Image (cartoon, rainbow, N blue to C red; front, side, top):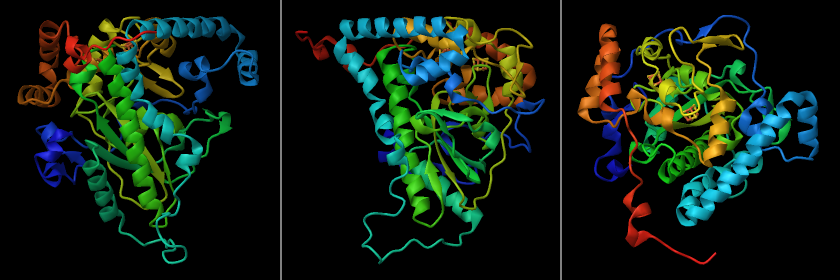
Length: 416
Ligand code: SF4
Ligand code: SF4
């Protein structure tokens, strides 16, 4: 983001592509349909079944009793994770309270803007004098409006923006907050915005910096979603911001449809520009907007040959080996074991960013890495060689915590 102060941001944009120019040598190839495979009727997902949702249930509450009466086999497994999370979180706070609180503070922004009362607010700009600026639904050119929205979002910090039909197959059946509430995402379109995380922060794998960066980018993306949604509302069209803690849809297929990237083995959407090292912000709307096509830069074949994230995932939650895709609710894809992943998080007391950091597509955007990505996209026969090079030269890819967190001069001690 510092570039914003040293270069005219408009010159950094490729508006036809909806992306920042300098992150890749050429944009990814556009295709007619997404590269995931639909092989049967798609079943929508119930967010209450997601590990994080289950772990947030408080024992003894009506929601807890209701959920485990339907899933009795899950109760002991989830209780174990809740206990681990309490213990490891307390230990980390005890060990380094100052940096631990910095790590957690990144999430406060998205927590502040995710409640329904914020998501539903500002439907009419409160700064207008009453009666003087009634909202009128403006008749806007969908192509031009899509381009303007992309420019707006890129200016506000996204690195890639795509617009697609809001496919109800990717919307949850039930939400987790409020628990079991009906999901209302009855909109025509969705504006998908991807915000890059700093590799200098996420390279710490499970460190303070990685945890802070994830929360901070969720918060930042959530805040921009609110701005864009309220801009659209004030042009007279329905719009709903989708901040991180109030976004009842499955991110990867929606962002794949919008041309942000492709579904990877790690379960994230891999972009050509920053790999999987980014966080989503989005706005659902009825405003007529031109759609983007999905992209294909060879990730299905690359991930089939690669598997570095699967080898390095500490609890082995990512499927390993060739032909490891399975059919999940009607879609053939790689399926991460969320329970194994989250159990590991609760054991270490932090989120883990290993699969984001070790992915060859997530390297820093210097000329060398951009050239390697370009080669990987264009020359399928060289992919195995590139992956070998990655395994040799980036075997131990843990970066250091930022000096301002760890240097002695910044160390703070306090009575507890
Ligand atoms: S976040 Fe960590 S534990 Fe979870 S899938 Fe990725 S590497 Fe594995
Ligand atoms: S590490 Fe390799 S297999 Fe995993 S998502 Fe990245 S490219 Fe795909």
